[in-house]
Image (cartoon, rainbow, N blue to C red; front, side):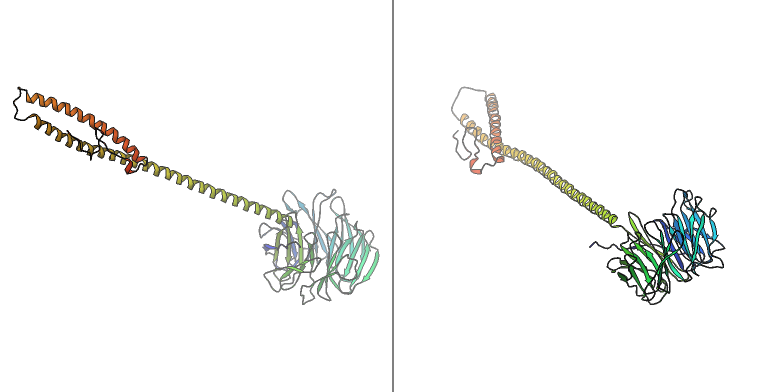
Length: 481
């Protein structure tokens, strides 16, 4: 079972000073309303104020509104306004001004002696209009090529009725439900001849046909319930919709969402949405006023959205408009939302991956810097160790050689009588030779130290290392002079 999508409030329209009697959508952005304050207001649903207000001093309360679509002989949509004074007005739609043209309107007297227009209906196939008065008079008009009306026939049912409609595949019949007598009368639409009268079990306050003509919903004044007849010829209702009505005031209903729901006017400022087939209540739409009787109800649908509008009986009364996406639009929206979520998740994953890669690169860079710093420290340490090793060895060697020099000197300067030798020159020559030997020895020691230090840096153990002197002996070995 598909999930029901709820309506949400779209607009709250205030401006009428009397009860709302009729509502009709021009399109998804324009709503037309008429009421007891004897005026018609055209609302732009993008705002909450009327774009134009239509009035005529000859009008009574506005009781009926219909739209005749443009056709080949009349290239503009006509707004048909029926009033309680018996006058009717036609307003052509001005495409350039995007509104209905007051200056080009025409007004006719339909019924004499203030016989109020009770209800009217349009035949959009044959471009005809049927009008029923409060006293039971019936007139059929046909629109000519100039968008004017010509009366075709007149009849009288001599009873109050509040329901009239064209029926048949070519609108060849007219059906009228009487209000209190519970009768349904069928007329020939071409000449007004009565075809059949059927006695029903209850009084019919209002009736609405589905757009395909296969179903009829009526408000039963006897039971105060809405009854569905499918097909309309059925003598008994197939589904009942309970709106918990406590009074016998007239209420209207409208099919919506491609005839899948019934939107029923109720009491206590509420409108109820029912499933057509099961009769289950799907949603209750609430007005701010809890005492208003919802007399005027209308619906409209596009490929993207469904709309509901309702007006109450309080003075003054407000109009509420609700909307919701179609199932296809909702599914598309959900697909887009899911795709957006996926894109966001992918972007988040990519961002986290980039962050991880950046962190790894940072760690690698820090490691490289740390290794470079350690390498520099090791190099400094190596140089320092090398310097001190050479320095210590040099000191030891110098000390050792000084001892040798002293021994040699004491040996050569004994008391024996020798031929005369210039001691000063001999000593300087000897010192030069010894210094030269010392420098060579120190250079050799430095070279061997470099070899030993390479073993240290390459991980040699202390037992593998030896320090030798110039003659190959270790420092602990005694060297005889």
